[in-house]
Length: 157
Ligand code: FES
Ligand code: FES
Image (tube, rainbow, N blue to C red; front, side):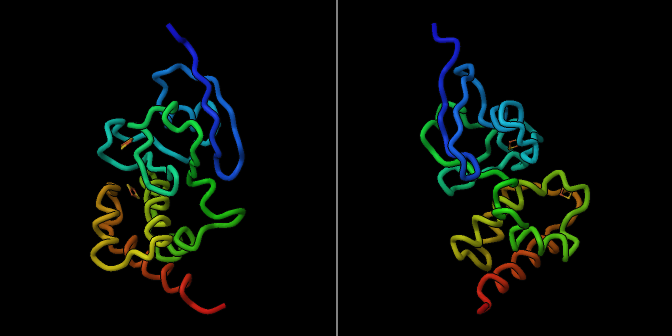
């Protein structure tokens, strides 16, 4: 029986290699093996979205993804969203007060950044963010921040 598998992935733009047990979750690889504790564990069951990361550009709940299945793929966590600075959506979340306890915020930021990258607007952006549970903000500020960020991204430099 295999007790370790090799996972080689591009993590926030950097090629990384890990030796992990076959059943290790991507969430645990990120937090415990890579030290990227921005990604949070809430429910551990795919319900809350706190653990959301981008896998090949698509938001996934990393508590439900086996680390081994990320082999050869690209993962972006909240730490990698802004390439050295805050992502426009993160800036807008701060400016709008869309962060209270902050526990949902990494997952919200990742999902929102993906929505912006895909040019998703209106009801579709609301539908996308429905998978990220926030018990504090009531979502109005989060959605307003996403609209602000969309305007900032679209605005001519
Ligand atoms: S911790 Fe993964 S969805 Fe809640
Ligand atoms: S800011 Fe507290 S859960 Fe969202």
